[in-house]
Image 1 (cartoon, helix red, strand yellow):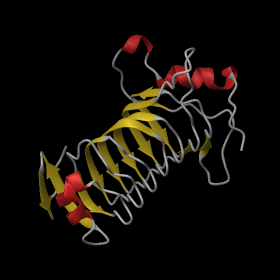
Image 2: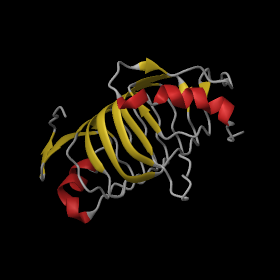
Image 3: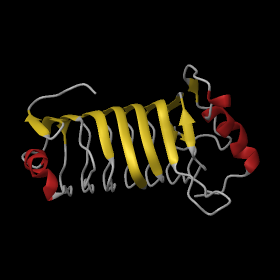
Image 4: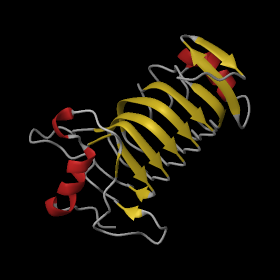
Length: 205
């Protein structure tokens, strides 16, 4: 799989992902990939040098192995998705994510890299399998999501989980109440408000 994007390939796409002068805007569509489509029917953005995206609608795209480039000082610039809408998008093994914020349907975040990541918004039928969310802050609505084999030693859990799966997940003993509920069945529903866990209930964040 080719992962080296030339400036000519990526420049126009990056210009669309980031609003000019930081001004608010309505969501814009992800531009077509210069690399066309994969046999899966997804637009080919594998290995793309992803850093920021604000108010963008991603639809049916493969960002597997997308990596945030390092700046001139050798520091990873980190990936920040803000107010985005994603439908059927793969982010597997992409990173490093510092913020994932928006509305996500049928997306995959398997084994992504994170750095004290904030996870905000609504996630439906998404797969986070094998991802380390160490020191992450959750403040989201998760519906039918899978957290199999995730490292969930989070800094904050303020979220709602509706019919989610946590098989093999690591949850710090500091959150023993959450761990007991999350591991109690194949699919579980609960909400976390402050330091309190409400089994069988959902909230909207």
